[in-house]
Length: 87
Image (cartoon, rainbow, N blue to C red; front, side, top):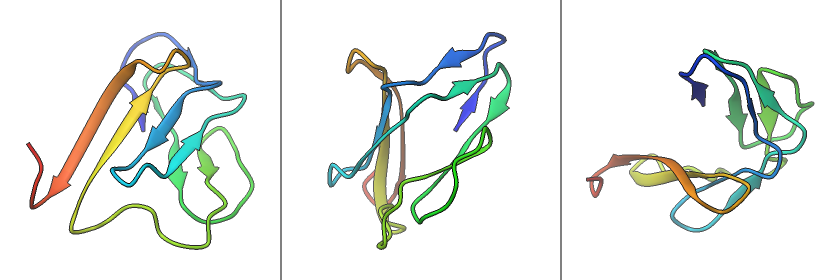
């Protein structure tokens, strides 16, 4: 996930979910302007550049899926779709 703006964003309480409603909640993460954080499905130690959902099974469907980013007020900020059924 990339912050394309110039200003940092506090992602505390923001969520990233797929079509099956697997949801990851960001905690205590400030994403600087023009920087990227990778969201991993598996387990690991969170850093400024990598966060982990601590799941044992894959979340993202490689055939067709959609990622939805919502802010701490549950407002959709962005979506990304891929695969057969994206629009």
